Amino acid sequence: MARIVMKFGGTSVADLDRIHNVARHVKREVDAGHEVAVVVSAMSGKTNELVGWVHGMPKATGASSPFYDAREYDTIVASGEQVTSGLLAIALQSMGINARSWQGWQIPIKTDNAHGAARILDINGDEIIRRMGEGQVAVVAGFQGIGPDNRVATLGRGGSDTSAVAIAAAVKADRCDIYTDVDGVYTTDPRIEPKARRLKKIAFEEMLEMASLGAKVLQVRSVELAMVHKVRTFVRSSFEDPDAPGMGDLLNPPGTLICDEEEIVEQEVVTGIAYAKDEAQISLRRVADRPGVSAAIFGPLAEAHINVDMIVQNISEDGSKTDMTFTVPSGDVEKSLKVLEAAKEKVGFDVIQHETGLVKVSVIGIGMRSHAGVAASAFRALADKGINIKAITTSEIKISILIDGPYAELAVRTLHSVYGLDKK
Image (cartoon, rainbow, N blue to C red; front, side):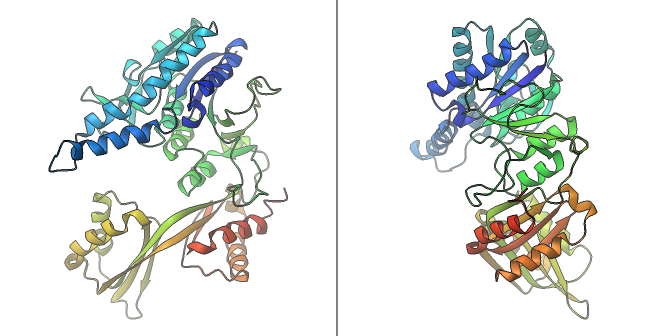
């Protein structure tokens, strides 16, 4: 017998038929004698609909300001998961399974006060553990908790993944199964490279890089939590037959295991290729090279909640001036330019330039720590294809390369091939 947390995303619970299919997956684990908790997202498209209602209300009421109370925003958008948790509990009860729905505040899942993007501070799993011990399935509404102001707080986009991993850590689950519309983590996006392979295992650090660099399989914060608390996490497909052979394998279910790198006996040099579209590059030309100038540039951007990524600095021959180039999401370009123009006098740059429509392609693998020449292979392969590199950043286990948008698919396929990921 094991203790399992199962999480189902929006496409997995998109309608009543799919919710019934989810119930069959849960029943399989219950029938095997496991203690089970389930975390659910809102039905596919429901959160967007609710957010649209919130954004439309100021206009509908003739309000002079487009702004709204973030606490009420959370009250509205959290209702999608509440509906799904109740429906799944009913479906399980109809199968003869003792099940009960839970909202975040009932557990409770305690968060900070950042409504709309709250972070989990603490979860008391005692009551759920007690109920599971009595054979009851807890069906938990993901994406939500309760803030210090005693109001519902939501965790931001993809927050149900975070809820699931956090609950798995709180109840000391043997594993956390993330069910989605794909059957695992692949070496790259199969829509771009048909030869992409499903990975049997991937280390927490690699998955964290993949998620933060463009892979959409898991939310970044959920991987961070899994790594900190060493929660073994499986990415699985909810669309496979719940009763197919192997689906109930406790130790080795179908899908991709995200785990500590010590569990991976043979570490590949490169594990996968990720990419992120809609990147933009901003350059500040002839900035005075003096202490504090970087803080004067990036401090205001951080205060404006703009995520700065790749940073390249070129200092003039005499050391008096520097060019500062960095990337931001394309959607934040106009906001970034306004922030920087406001700080121009303090920063002291001559001119500001920007370029949109760029793509960041990243090579990821824990084996890169002990192998030389990985970066050189990437640069040589891209050069042979006539792809110009605009910026490069590296870490122990990743190389990120900024290129023009139209070359994204060619770059992904080229790098996937040069490291032999399509042959292993």
